[in-house]
Image (cartoon, rainbow, N blue to C red; front, side, top):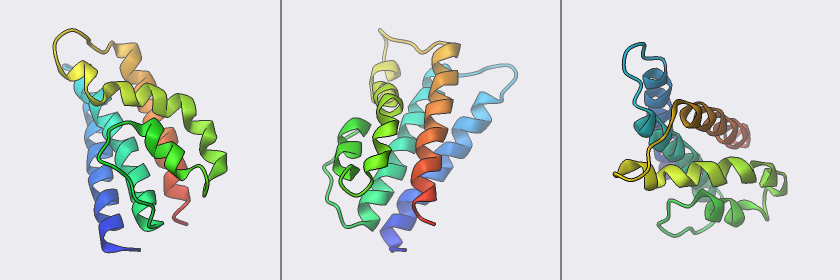
Amino acid sequence: MKHLTAEWIEKAEEDFFSASHLAAAEKLTPHNVICFLCQQVGEKWLKARLCEDDLPFPKTHDLRHLLVLLKGAYPEWISLTDQVRRLSFYSVSTRYPGDSASREDMEQALVDMRAVRDLVHSSFG
């Protein structure tokens, strides 16, 4: 595995750990932060795969765009279309006033994050 790929995965796993532990908090559950972290996990795992496969990618938080870049090598990943669409929403929108994530949004983001993480992770063998 390339050094840069390993760095993407390490950062993705830090966000995964953070999102998972914050979601388990009993008193304060910061839905917006957790949704943002879920988006970041998906983004970093997709970028790790792109990096490892020497597929160039732009600076973007749009997971849909990253998935399109991978569809030639991993056509079965089209199954992630709904998950990456939902996660992409949390890259910016809920970080500022005007939109807020609900508990239901957070729970769905956690499910979507795990789906992206698990599929991309399995591609590394």
